Length: 208
Image 1 (spheres, rainbow, N blue to C red):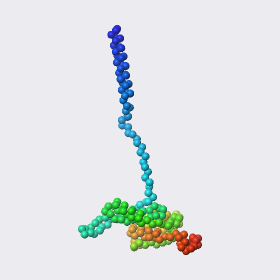
Image 2: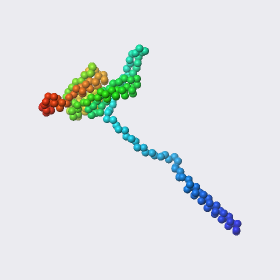
Image 3: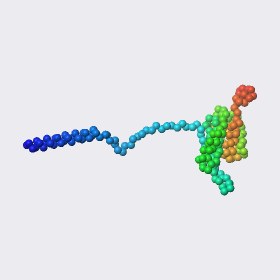
Image 4: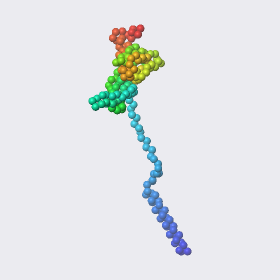
């Protein structure tokens, strides 16, 4: 009987010591994070300010230049730059690569910006623009007409902010000549108030 009591006491003591050791280990060990769980890091994406300038590529053509050693190949890009608020420009540039040619044409277009006198949503009066062999006729149109034009002429008018207009290309079909002829016509437009000021009259007298 005594031996059985001693064995029971020894077993109880060993169980208590094992439990104490386990509790101490669990308290000492840091909590492990579950494996395979990916942290979802929400990064605040900085919204880049959008530029008001719109760039449209009208034509990319491959050109060759005859030099002493043979022919030199390059690319010519025609780009129209505008903000649809009365400012527009046409740029033309050449480079050995297409991307560089477009970048140079955009820079050239921003250097040659003009301000278009938009009257309501159309132009103040009919006008004809010329550039080389290109000839473009522009006429004002009523609300809801839209832009009746095509090719480079349409691109220039859209980026200039004109919404209603009638156009007709009478000369060369080259995109560069058509774009430059349109720019020439828009550049020579005058508002009613400017004409009235020159003549010393009111706008109502001129319109009548």
